[in-house]
Amino acid sequence: MKDKNYTILFEKYLRNEASADEVAQLQATMHHDAKIQAIFEDELRYSDSSMDENTRHKLFQNIRRQVYNEKEPRFLQKSWKKALYWAAIFILPVISAFSVYYYFTQKQQIVNHPTEIIARYGEKAEVVLPDGSRVWINSGSKIIYDDAFNRKQRPVFLEGEACFEVATDKDRPFVVKTKAMNIQALGTTFNVRSYDDDEQAYAVLLEGKIKVSASGQERILTENQRATFNKNTHVLTTDIVRSVDFAQWRNGNLYFDNQTFEDIARTLSRIFNVDIRFASDTLRSMRFSGTLGMSGIQNALDILSLTSPMRYKMDGTTIELYHRK
Image (spheres, rainbow, N blue to C red):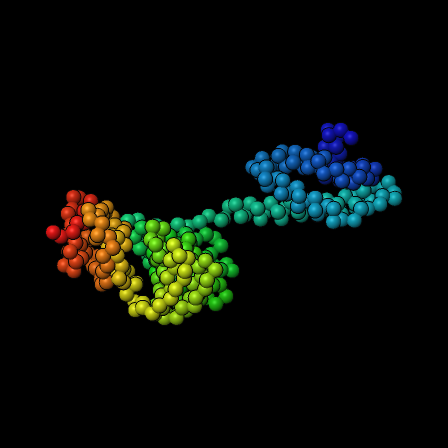
């Protein structure tokens, strides 16, 4: 049968205008996949030009499975009623497959838009998520969540540092995903730090309970515990800390726990949106423990100068750190 004749016959079939012989002829030809696909795709292009090639192909495969699951009917009489009967049996699964597949495909394409909240250098942000959870976002950080949030789970993607106060919902676990590790909670408060340019990522639990996963390792944290993942060694460790110190940045203070000046300089660069450079490499490995205020970059540098041989020069937003002579 020529393609044109097949198309005409197929259209008659859809309108319930095909005879019993024509229905039988169509049924016999239905086993030629290439023929079916060409006709179906032509019809779909005509009826819905917005549908892309991939969607049309998936739709055809779905319809084909539906059709081949039906038993082959035997046409014993050339009666109009039987033609309609078999047409109904044949075409309803096809229409259903099209309707269901296209509805869910289009729905997914329309509603699955991510929400991104960014705190740029020199900024902080606070947001309430759709489930009522609160998130404080530190400088140079962002969180992303999409419409899958608050369904079976509550996934949030984090780059940088944020403190989470999670609304309790035992049926839908709250999951924070970073490049280095994942943190799962039910109802709890915790701080996560995972910057791309930091050697380590960590999660500190303020209250409740969380599960930290990284590189095939898992740790359950209770209050005042920290899980640290070393990106170089891929080892996940835990220790006891004073957890409230690690969330002080929400209230205008920066806490450092035996961190190198190089790490501290990266943090200050994000917080105050400045460019800090080292004139002396020996300063990079020096360490500092304590709290620095966030009222201004000069105040923070003055405190570091009092507790170390470090000195600094400022030229606008460029700062040079050098060793005291």
